[in-house]
Length: 250
Image (cartoon, rainbow, N blue to C red; front, side, top):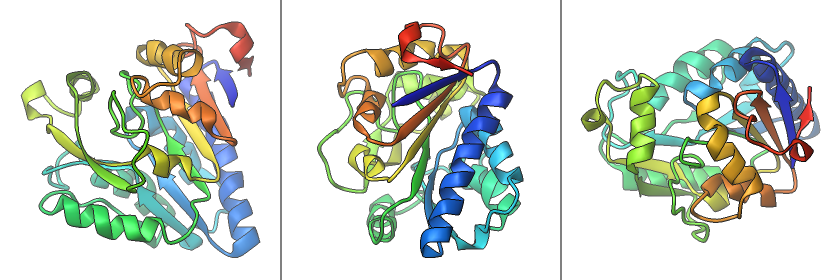
């Protein structure tokens, strides 16, 4: 696992976007298309802004899969991850082939239909973050490390739901949905490459737990350390609790 630490979120985002751009270009050069998984949330703002500005990316040959979404939340809601991806990635790049998780009415059907599309061919690169409780996608602790289902319906724990309020997506805890549709842990790990983007001091404890602690369902993102091709991009705030031997300062 490669861990790099940057002075601020902008330089972090630029570096992660540079690596993501290379992965996409390489996949298109080798086989004519690239398949990606996109994360959402406040932690991805700078990364996606840099990625969508990257030159010479053949976006019409990129197929995008959605990582997670709240169940029952309309697309017009400010916290909708479908809305987020449309505004921050799809519309800015011109991606034509994308699979958004419409979990408003029939989440079980969406799990099956998008899951079939996702597993039809390998994913070239997945973009992920880490939650304040160590979650990976919406797989809160204790996460299911065993299921082979590509997507799951999961219950959101209180720490995860409070994070959404603190980030400004919802006004009160009671507004945050209790359940979500999430890509499974094993499905994320099937990606050929994983780029993990984690800025901000509020993520420091989770970063330490997941990168230096025991690999455990109680720290879901710790499983990323088992992947053969993962890069983690941190800023000085999110990395502040890590031992120096675990990081290379950029």
